[in-house]
Length: 168
Length: 86
Image (tube, rainbow over all chains, first blue to last red; front, side, top):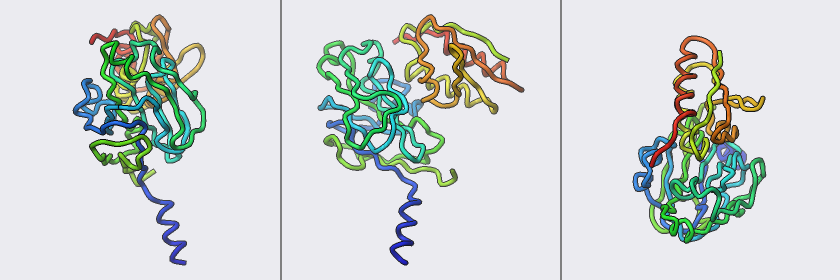
């Protein structure tokens, strides 16, 4: 009985934990050298200064959209939460060079599944920042995001916790 | 009503311009759609706007009805025809 009650509570939990999609250092969005992200215009979240080049799924879900130049992906969670992982700043201008997508739009993915292979050296040699903002794209669903700043490794649990609005 | 715009940004409608379109669409109470090549997408969802896959030179129609529809369409059109500078 109690177990069932707790089970129900858990099912109603209104948070989504984001596992680190990359190794590196989790920083505040305010440190991202792009006003669209740093001022929160792209949605709430955090960023990773990456040291590894394999972007991994932050939770079980679906690929909502993979940008055709491979530098950004939106992963959809079962709750409706949509998370945008945008590798580097202005990297759209690299026109896909240095980015090898490993999934496509509509694919179902498991947490930890590789999504994009990124050549970080190539991004930096081309003169772009590799800092990777991770933001909630369906911001109407989110009440807030808690982030744990500092060094992380890919797949570390809950570098961000998204609190969903209770009314849905 | 609807108006058709030609995308001018050399990198197309990627994450940042797509977000600007969503913000402009959300300022309007009613439904706003983007149409390209016969496919219709809600302008209020970042995923949907990115799904349009609009490239430089593409024609995109913006569709909305009701009070304020023209202002919303023009605001979105302004993003479609703008070129980013860094």
